[in-house]
Image (cartoon, rainbow, N blue to C red; front, side, top):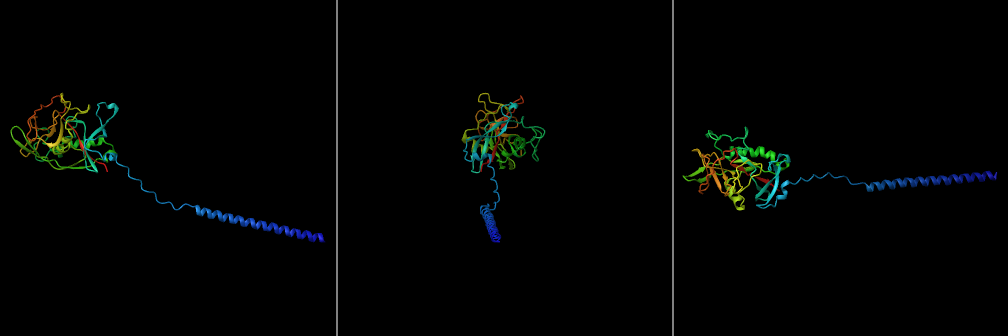
Length: 307
């Protein structure tokens, strides 16, 4: 009897011990889970902010923001070595002016012969209202010229990429009238209406302001340019957008003034194909070229944004 009572007491004691151990483990397990949850809350990252807008890519021309007149750089590409198999060559430009957020540049070389290389069925002078068109297509101002049309369509598209075109500013241009003197009389030629262009030829006033101080009036042509070259100097004649001598009573001209290859002086051409120096300077006749080579070429100018 005593043995049964003792065994019973031992069984109850043992059960109590195991019951206590199970309760304690469960408490510690719950405590562990609560601590783990607290740690996760503490280490949770803060809410993610909205992504910042990407910075706008800098202009290709930003590097030239501090360029000074006379500095040279490459921008765009055009066929120049007359070897089509190696693609177009980078165009070299000379800085003429820096206005802080934009620079005026001029091609270092004459890149194309005029009129033979630029004119076709679509690229021709437009007729001026009321002007005679019986000779060389029409009297011409910069506004209606084949040169302007070609520069701002064919050349603009072929010589520059989309990114490069984004740097070329539209320029509000005024072409002043030309006051000149030849051997017989003084004259007054009309510059025509104002225009808005990406690329352009310089006016006589711009030539005086920007080109003459830098002593870069004389220019060579590229190997691909079909233009008459002065054999003694190697330079070629290039056109301004300023009109030459008037050929009609209303003051319009057939030609633009140009820069002479041997001297770098400004000339105009009369209706007989003779050239004369502007502003009362001495005559310097140059006979027309009869072998199909252009007498004149283009050095193109443009304003580039550099901010």
